[in-house]
Image (cartoon, rainbow, N blue to C red; front, side):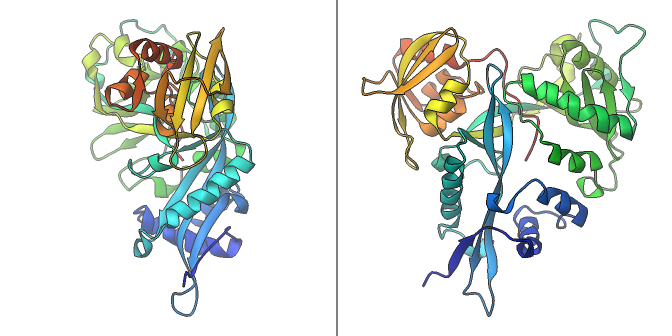
Length: 403
């Protein structure tokens, strides 16, 4: 007899949910009460799904949990998509391989479709879980270590660097506004709703250890940096870098690479960030890894493809496979003046790919030719060249927010 029941979370469930989350994600301790209170303001009960096992002992136990945020995502061309940000997905180690994740995902997809969202997004702790549901990695970053001793800029600043350390009041006033300006114009950027800022700006102690400092904020009228110092090895760890203009980008990095007694600056950069080319020695920027920062699953193929813009005009018939949901079919993508019209069609396919591959192409973070080389896309050489040109945006996607 199946004793597993799926419901939404209620206030009474959250202490157990917090404990499950701490175990699942190997946290040293559950979230503090102040953080939980702010977190609850971001997630209504109907955006949560939990599964209880009613056959354990005399009571019931939560054995699986997941939730989603409603988050704005800027897509190529500047339109902002309403997305669902899947998060907190966990299944107890005692109940693996019993279909619990699939059951929660089915409930999520039903809710997302009912809400009219064209895209779902997530940040994945493991890389093999979500492709079966149509998710594909769509944005990457370069994790770099920068040697300040070698970071000499080709152009030196004037007498005023335009950068100041911010007071708490200045940070609360300026940072959310600058981030909103940046996110509105950056491909792949995740906007931060008002309910997210109290937790971000609080900088609570559980986010650092005994050897790391509080966050220091460098402010520019068109950008900001939040960083902390690791006293053990004298490194500066950049946790948030936002620059709306090229001038702000250069000014902020000049200050970051001039910090007293700092041996290395660690940061996560967009893959097309120009920092190394601003320096006389590009090797001062040492790339350590290239992790995926955002996964996407296209929920509505027509709406999603018509939402973004394209750099090359043309027409292709895409045959999309979907082994999980109902997105399979042939779609004619016609781009005129950068704007797309998408219709279902019975015409022969020019390109064959699955929904996860199409989702990976969506922001331009992966080139179609790369997937073709891996046998993830089938197309003639001409169709592949057109597909690659269509989906390659002027700048690489960069979400800038982990969730």
